Length: 427
Image (tube, rainbow, N blue to C red):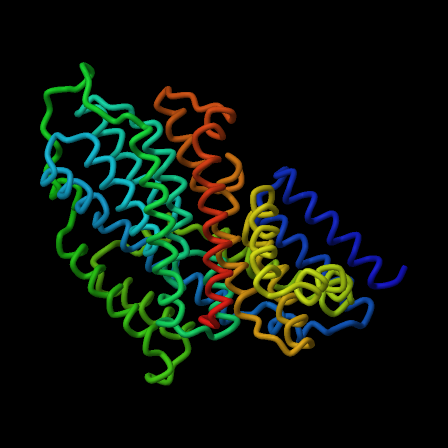
């Protein structure tokens, strides 16, 4: 059997496994990497010494270190503190509190893992909803939708953004100049739906005080230290080219400093970091390397090239965004971005056109696509499961009735925004 045929079979099998969700995605990626290495070496496509290069160790180290930093911020109690502090300042005004919670979710998702934000802010939402007598269910669903918007905010805010930025060396400040207006626009659109939630206090309100925000902080020193370390990390990443250090080294250094100075037990952080992400990304990088060397990616690129080359960039980039989003609604966005990145890179390089509109299509589409279904976004799935554990059932139809209009309108705005940026040469 020809190498290309063998790797094509592996490719189809892996995609089907990811779609079926029979096994954990990290296990599927590790299987894909194992098969790629075995057949790649057997066919003489590459040697064992090439696997480390295919692994993209710098990218995996960067992602792992950022996950550790995110976890330390979350464990410090910062998010709980800010949420409860602002709730106390606002007082017993349900609509304003719900508005504040949605905004905080968007911001916190830019500096922490989405699932952690959903669990923390969702818990605060349920607490406040019980105290003030409003239905927190749709507020939590809107928060889940907004976590993926926050994932666009910074280059470190989501795995798709981390992958593209670390592979392309995209400048931090230039990234934020593009991402910040988009996040603001999409958030304002989400907030426009809030009056339809009819959030008002009710008879179910309990005569209880909103918790003292300091009760959420076990160790104030740990909170201050974790916050300072994270701010210094962001500054170092912004000016990494002037410092003369790689983003991967900076992230690893600050992860080490976090363990030493944050005052948080390292075992506590290690226990809660999502280790499946670096295993998944690393395994899929090796798998993509095998597909590239076997010629499978070249065949896929041949079919995708017309989208990029035979259309105006103003149409091609938004169309790629839409394709990425739709596929990400069925398959996890990480493999989608990992698969499409080298294809987009090679096609644009051969054609001599700027790849950045298409890179941004992957970042935006990868983040916005998962909310189109209840299972495409881990944040949405986590929020629904959290409600179900509290005895609040959310059917697929109910989620789609509420969440799909918001998600689709944000997706359409993202496509328009990308076209405008491309039209005026801003990316």
